[in-house]
Length: 246
Image (cartoon, rainbow, N blue to C red; front, side, top):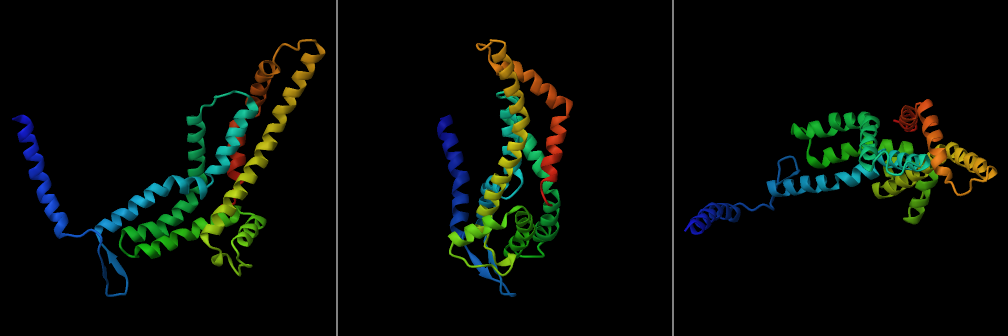
């Protein structure tokens, strides 16, 4: 009897909702007096959910996150500390440094695009186009001309007259390729001092005939001491922040 009562209760709740859904279509659009198109609530919710789904990809490909994460991962490999700091700490530091670097861009997007859209002053299409402007300027400042020319040639485009003529699907791979190259360049410069310590320790152990002892065990304290003495984390963070032209 309890199961029957619960089933009837659920059916009584769902039947009015189904009737409302049949009378009010979700996928509708109506023209407005100014020539724009007003979409139904269902389409607006679908757009918002689509944007939320793409947020992780946007965070990785359109911000400073990629460079910072790769540099910190290479630094951990150079120190030889295995999983210390952990992946969660590296991701958290990369995220907060990204927010710090991108804060001027976020402020411009909020003031010129998102805030007017939420207030109803501009439509969604115009707000989206206005939000792309500061992001495109940030990506152009970090993108190499050679990478941009390569992807433009691969896409069958000629020389662009201005930055506004560059499509977003040409700018994005160019920006990401430039970020990967810059990240590995910074990682190489970080790796060299720790590699020298490993080579010196290995040479000393070889000269002493201690070939069975792993050089990593001996060199790890020296690398940690060097990193602490130069205030490594502050130096790396300052270097990463200053490497971006914002």
